Length: 381
Image 1 (cartoon, rainbow, N blue to C red):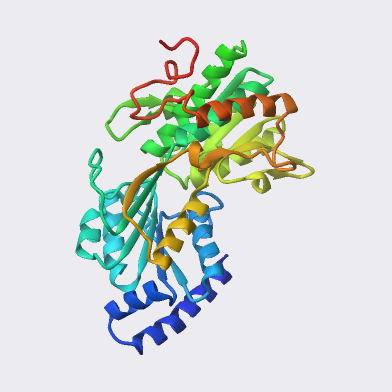
Image 2: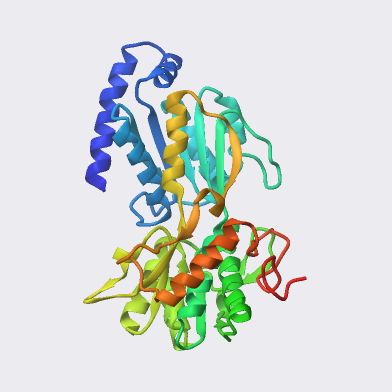
């Protein structure tokens, strides 16, 4: 990955040399819109674009765009603190040098001032919105995409509850940002759905000492590492949950989830459900594999789609929620990339259709329902 990035930065230098010869920065922007390459930056958390998960999936969308538009370039930049003010400042520091800035992560919420001050630049936000929480103002040069992580979490919960042998499962998260809490609540919704619809009695295990606190200060329970990079704590949590009897763990913790994977591999009789992307390759453990399936958030294709609209001159600023109805959430079901039984696959296909049609609406962080009472749960009135 680093070698590829180096080559892209080099091509960026060559493209920049060409653009400088054409005139001012504003001229560069016009040329990008009219057919020449886009100069793209992606600003990420400390785990970077080779985290094998969230950031890398966004980065892959950019690489796919560049593959189809070879005059375009990308530079990857890390903002290590995870603090919203610092993240927005990191974007402000580089905005003059690029045509498009892609910012994956909740920490980039509130980028509206930078966008307003730079109307000739385009911004693609993933998992955050440009203005303050609750402010749905649309900016002409900002495309913000949120995903219904609760749907992916729901599919993970359904899979875990249908496949568990010990009747104990758990979810491990990174930080209680809304997207992560959505995964947690969705997972819990899925387990509760299976318990009611299919007559199972699966327990969701939580470690009180690792309960999460969301952005409003509310205790949301669950099992939270506290950041997205602490593999050691991830392993501690994973090991503790396994000792509690869990045989399936859904891991939505970024690079910190690698520690949970290690705990599962060492245990030998535990399966893991991956998150955001297909993590089957990460599950290899000698001659076996610990990955049951992966909950999907289709970011790469959506990032590529928006970049193509910028290139084509059809870009429209928007704040959008991407869901199953646009095939933007789901789970891995391709043969050879999961270990779900045929019976589980059939049940999940039925459930996916209900979610896609809006007949089942899993709970989310601020959705007004709970994992114990949501639309589509038979007991919900």
